[in-house]
Image 1 (tube, rainbow, N blue to C red):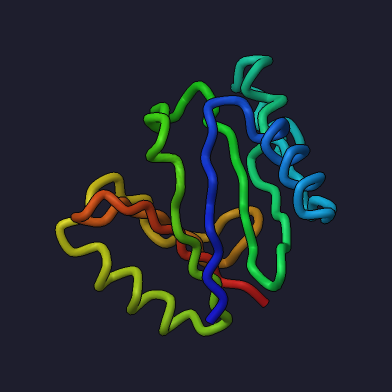
Image 2: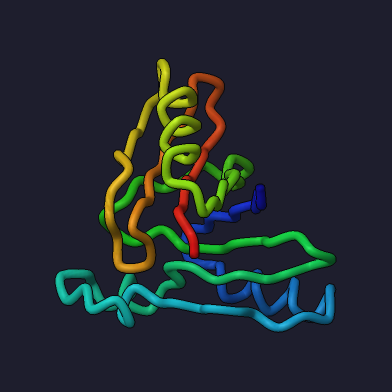
Length: 135
């Protein structure tokens, strides 16, 4: 089961990606901005922010995003989360439900532009988790 580390920034994801690309000698994959998703209601600054990007480093995925104006800012130092990506919807749903016990900030599992099943929670220990059905 691939598990990725997710870095969330206020608006510095592109700078962080560039820094880590150089440090690890890798190239970003799948960089998506909020503008490219066709979200016209967002302010101009948010349109240009990174919605998602991936760096593969020694077999581990580091994922990045910025925080658009409609989302709560993540406190500095608390901007890392865990991403579980599975091809098995049943297993993904089970993990989501178990980790959702006493969780806050729940985005229910749902179909998105990039996945048939995606959801997010902050568990009872304050750890941010994303669940993504792939393949």
